[in-house]
Image (tube, rainbow, N blue to C red; front, side):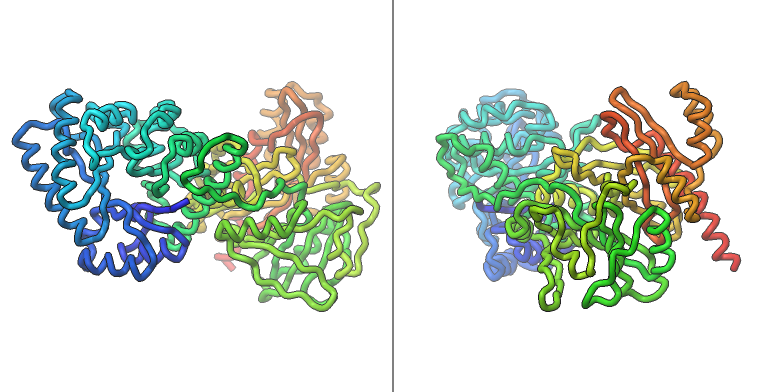
Length: 621
């Protein structure tokens, strides 16, 4: 599949955008007019740079407000268009995007519009240029692709075709199935954009909230299947207007964009598998991978070894051994849960989640798929006889490893610590319930796509949780079985600037236990510093659920929180924060599948109060 990206998607200069697109692996680009206008490079120099980088110049855009105007204005539009055609000849691109009129349209007559497009097409043909007519979702008279196609058919000119843009079609909830009825040779260009479902005017939605395929809520795979059935064989291009993308690093945004197209290509091919459809796009499938069966290990990096291992001991973990060749690496175990502690960092460095190991059926296929999706491999050395663990970097820098599932359930790498899998019978903690990862706002959508495409996790509907520093956006990435659950949180801007904790926004590991009361009592005996829960919470809890007084008193005694829905109950407690990490211990009763969302504001407020107190103490000292 030929891939392309509009330069408007990326930050930087036109030249920087071109280098980033080429480095990411795109076949071509759309040149956004403003990027060229503000560039000191001549059209000939841009053409030469594209040739050096191996990029095709697939589209010049946009040409606005050309149609549905009176004779005098249309004559001016023809003069303007001819100047652009001459420019395109210098640039070396032969297709121009013509948008349906938004600002100057005054004639609501398809015959008139078709006649004007025909005349524009006749002029374009003299310069070897084609016109791709696009229905903007907010066009004054033409705002849907079927209407635009009827006008193209009326124009009946070989240089006039249509541009199909997924945002303009799906944002208006138009059925994309009629794409299959468009003659393939009249589909001159295709632009793709996904988006979250928002309730707002479509123009603002388009200008600020588009995302790459797989990062929003549109059925992009369905859109693509209609395109393939139509027989389209041209470039598939990204046109994304997004405030975060245009501020983010140009190279990583380009990589994210190509990853989205490779994922979409794979998903489309699989969706069409078995259909007698001629694949004119040349869709390539990625190596198939199953969703992970669970967490193999969690690695924590810390320059505060003593307080970190003390906390693990308080939660019931025991030292499983020291690594045979990496003297700064320890293993802590409880039942089937394995936490690797790495203190190969300067003393005092904050504690953080460094790596996650996922149990997968075929690690080789998983790493192959991940690297084809432009994920960077993690460099890792191993000594003689040590297991080869292969992984890639997630967008936030976390290392993601793909670990096999041995038949006996005992990972071979445990031997490197001199450890064997212990009996699980007496363990209170019996699994990793979920891992909550904090994401920088500008890379949140990238993280959603990464875990969707690389690990085959599905994104659940997002929700906002209020906290002292602002709303925290949370979206759960989940395997179908529920064995892997990863809420991704976007920290409020104030928290990222340090006003929340004086450091990075915290993330946490949630441990599943069979008896949260017993786990809390054991932790208290061992001196755990619980995150305190205010009296007001328990009074509100009693009002909400009409709980037994003794039960509420037991919760309050141990700083436990509680939630309930129609399927079951959820009980949990939090530790204090070490660096950027804290732990949660949870017990699920019945079929409760949530995460105690009503209790999140309590946790956020308590963490905020504690962090502010610690900050004041450091300042006064």
